Image 1 (cartoon, rainbow over the protein chains, first blue to last red):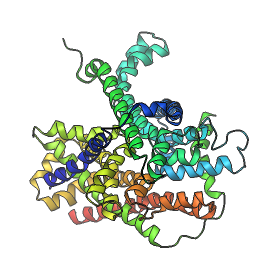
Image 2 (cartoon, one colour):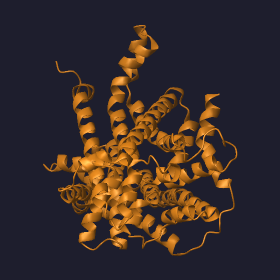
Image 3 (cartoon, rainbow over the protein chains, first blue to last red):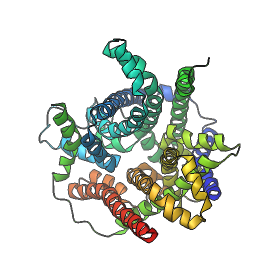
Image 4 (cartoon, helix red, strand yellow):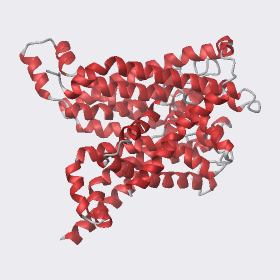
Length: 258
Length: 233
């Protein structure tokens, strides 16, 4: 039974890679410098980096902190509560935030949807991604050997140093995984920023989809090129970050070689 | 104090649901399409997820590392980017604008998560326990041992795939060529057309579907396990 399903899974999993290969084929004769000369793409790159990095960082910080709190204080109510946003698709979440932040009552004037700083976009992503990070980190904290922390306490290290030597090395791998999953997810999506963003500067995903679908696909290659370049950038970033941390991660997983 | 802050941060977006009267839910093509995709993808994801994870746990094949990479990599590729590429592929084979094409692309965006969830669960249960079940013939093996052990994981896989599927607008719109309306695509149209009560109804449906499915499966699985236990007594 399992061999057949593996075969099918492999075919399905190969499809995105085949898709990327086709993107590369389609954009072979594309003039790449034209992207940089277009002010819309330049502005889009800047605002995409800003929204992605801010929402990812905040989600990682809050998610990790909550996982830590739940493990240390055994706050079961918190893990039950954090399940709630996981039942809400991104689209529905974005529409709820839109209703709250554009209708008037009670946040009106303070923060608004559809403004240049994309605060509500970031807020929506943080609300949706914190439970995801929480789940990723909860497992890690569950497996964490408390002996290291006790040892650090016995040695009278400061609280920061306790964290640095007894927790941080173990958090590195799941944090890196979550970081790149979130970056890939947030930086090139349409649903949330299309509802809550502005028409200029647009996030990369929104601009790419709009250029692709307006005007009889005449600008299709431009969107294909952006999708390809952005995927390559993320892959290179992920690859480099895993390479740089490889030695430390291996030491955590397999122990120091004697 | 921080407790109050966290609770209100998590709960306050749900206030939006009370911002108006949603139009009544009707069993039309839009809802039927959505339910069709949710249920078929839940079934396929559970089947392929558990099957592939099982293979990964037990195999001694030299292809194991390659398959592991194939499961890992799609998580780091933006769904929309690879979907632009798949659009070109599917357009060449004539699957754009068909139910099958949309189903396939939705499966591509959910399967890596399902395999990972299933693999983690089986890894925690441990290979020795799973190996013992090999003495049983396939059907009792699944119904008496694997199903009770993996029921919670199957429910999580269904929840994850459902929420991802319901969140896809661009994918359904582009691969479906605008011909296959779902609740998600309708939400964007009613939002653009300023139809707040319809958009609110869509939002209610998008949240209620995963909740009902999760609660329903919970009850169903509990009942099934109870029947199984009584039969064994």
